[in-house]
Amino acid sequence: MANIIQNAERLHYDNQINNAHNKIKNTWDFINSETQRKTSYGEIQSLTTGNKSINNQQRIAEAFSTYFLSVVDSIMNNKNKVFTINEVNSINNDSSKLSIHI
Image (cartoon, rainbow, N blue to C red; front, top):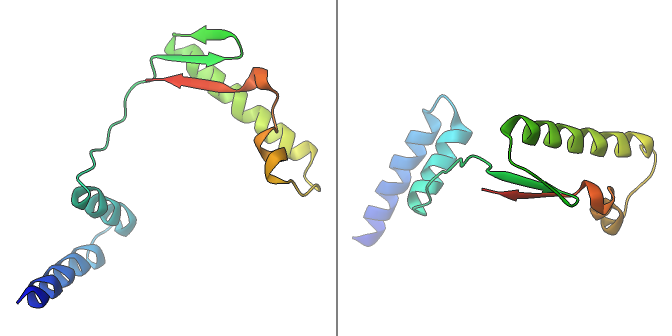
């Protein structure tokens, strides 16, 4: 009996995913509902970059932009180089690392 119920559930979820317009989103919605995880998009309250704390939302957005552009610049400046994992982890110096507080 348990096997019949399990097969019915599998068929039900397979049909939901296969008939979904956005299969990836539907799959993640299913996974999150089964694991009872809630999606939460909290607003970033503060951001620490180097030794400076930022609380203004516009300045936080600008700090992210600056950070990611510096990563792109570092990659582009070394585009023919094969990086080790340690080099990837230290691609920016410590003053450009970000700490997020939600």
